[in-house]
Amino acid sequence: MKKLFSILFLGLITITLAACNLQTTQASGKTYMVVDINPSIEFILDEEGNVESYNLLNEDAEIVYAAILEKDQDFLGLSGEAALELFLETAVELGYIDVTRDDNVVLITVVTEDEDEEENQRNRMVRHAEGYFVGHRIGAIVIDSGLTMEEFLEMAEEYDVSPGKLRIALSAVAEDDELTLEAALELSVRELMAIIQPAHRARVRAFVEEKVGERMAMAQALREEARERNQNHDNDSAHMSRAQIEARVRVRIGEALESNTNIDYRARIEARKQDILDDNTEDTNE
Figure: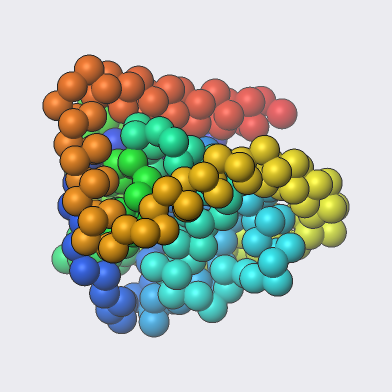
């Protein structure tokens, strides 16, 4: 029950919309970041803001990662922004993000030791993802960590901690059967990351040894399925300047949020949250 409860908050809500200039800034400490589209992936960034380890949170993330390995690429050593973009780019390539829709949804969670730095990095990652979508004329919203989830906020208030600290503590508890939530909340973010990281490395090693061939075949099938749709989308926007693309995407998203299509966004967000809960419940029961 402890594990199940700690995992149930992995899908997180708060809508932020903006497309800004992209910047890379050095982090003052390690950073914990989760990107969820379905596929879902968890990163730990080092003090320089580069990927130190990562965890593939579901089968779809394994398929995306297999496609990345097939291209002789990897997340290790990339900046957080570059890793985020590589993940989004490959998700588009495989059709997990549908270039023909206006209601794609990406969830991003960022946690650091310092609250101001946490906010800066979270905003930077959200803007980077939004910039990617604008630059590729893809209708999508990027969702900040789930600080409007009522149960989550109530729990954070009960323990007198920030929602970000609670989020990573729950993740650490899910990795360590002997760690209680109360004990986890007494640890620093760096100490919590130290609990999570060995599991990252072990799982990636096991994936490469046992599953990568099967997942590459699945990635190839998905790529072929999405190829024509993606090619038509690229051809349609090839003649457009970035300013034209940005204006067009802003109009599309604006219209969607002001119309009944907004229901589609909300429905997809709620469906994605339920998928996360269902997936993690199944994992816990295995």
